[in-house]
Image 1 (cartoon, rainbow, N blue to C red):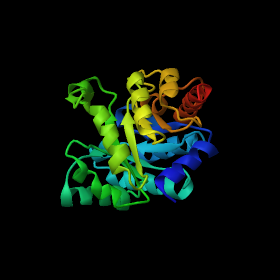
Image 2: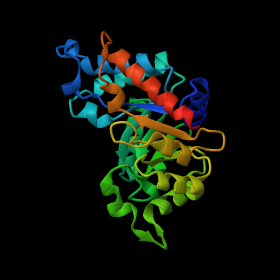
Image 3: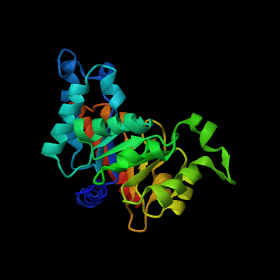
Image 4: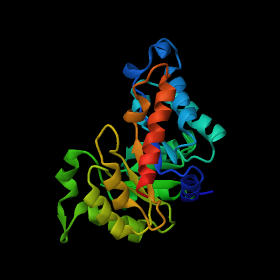
Length: 272
């Protein structure tokens, strides 16, 4: 099964466009995990178990693991998801952007070491920085287009033949690079007008949309701008707002995460 097929099935099976980001920050972990040698794995496993029926995808951010020399725990959580929830795609958020043999090794890292269904990539160095990922025809390449950070405008709005660079990237991916139907684009929830413009350019290609939750992206505007005709087409990511939800009463951190994930999933569905 390809990444796009698995994602489409998850949209339907879980009635969800919610992507749960896994950005483990040990400074924010509950006290009971503080001394565990595998605290990162334990934390992520609890979040995954609490939200798997509410998510269309999980998105581990590689930097949060690598900075703590915890790549083995990232491997373990990816294996756990693949074994326990094989129907939910894993998007490795790595934003790789090198070329040639180096890009081939990054593709192997994502798709062999971590067995991710898709990986985020940076197109700044052109097609040969993305091509090695496309050789894995059952996996996805999710290309940065219009990112959610304020500084993205420094480059993404540069004029390229009468249109902003982010639209040029959308055209390239949709019209040339997506020959195997395995690509998606990153467009931030903080820019709903740009989401709508990208959607008009690319048809039904999936969008990974960060920026909802802690970054303040508006759910209604995001969904209305990015949905496809059948009310899907998006992985709307929330990370910190779910991972570090404040517990009410006797809730555990996992129960609090589930509550916020459910609220977010249902808020998204309200506007589909």
